[in-house]
Image (cartoon, rainbow, N blue to C red):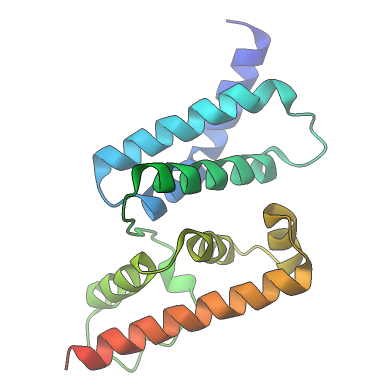
Length: 169
């Protein structure tokens, strides 16, 4: 095994949680998640020789992983369903609902499922505690634009959750 391969495998092992999260965010069943995980890993491996270390590996990985997931989603025309254990970090007040925690998470997942691929990416960055500046860098847009898009994505998500809640009673 070459030193390049060894270095790559060590980095992937260290950051595989990110790839799992993105795979779960964009694909709703386990087989599709595995396929996306493999596709992301393959795309990262193809690009790895060009990684110059000017940014953190994790930052570089996020960009490739999200772009791959968006392209994979579009090319397969699949619907996605987030399954992120950190959804409770999302600052939407679900306390007003009398449902148990599992039902709250289910409603959150269903709402995120209705977002477009770009809004899902924004929500992912938010869940990963990225700043507006970091999101802007990742998406190649201005910081102001990133903050506006993030606020709109959060508002859409709140509206979807409220619509679901009021529609089920």
